[in-house]
Image (cartoon, rainbow, N blue to C red; front, side):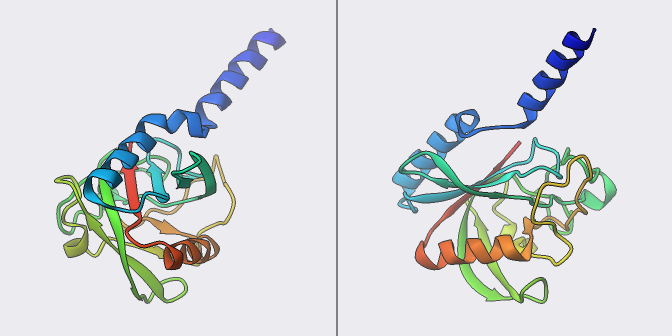
Length: 189
């Protein structure tokens, strides 16, 4: 009995502890998109919304070495109460939906924000599933209520559709974004 429980427990944990090899398809998609459309070919951001919100699901990928160089927590949109805090189940590109949009986006200019550390990055959606990001004011920003470390099984508070991270994590992304332009952000489930 104990052995069976241990094996099932390990299998469950392995499903949620994703490694870079779990993202080969997504990384190759980003590389091809970057090459074809002339975006940054060194660094990219991945957000895996299939993971629980209390787990690290925002990844910074070195596209040259295929390695994660940073990872952190990120909120998903509440979809006006449709989504639970634990998992994002619904996604939308509609104005005032408060939902997260999936697809490829590019991180654009840094601007003032009233949230977190008073700066944000504008996002431009590059696909039909997210091409309203700018009109919806879906931006990459920080919030002081975000944790720096995984809090699973506790869930994060949801956002109004923005990929919201901790102040410290945004500061680390800020260093990367100041050194790299046209960085792609790929959100998927």
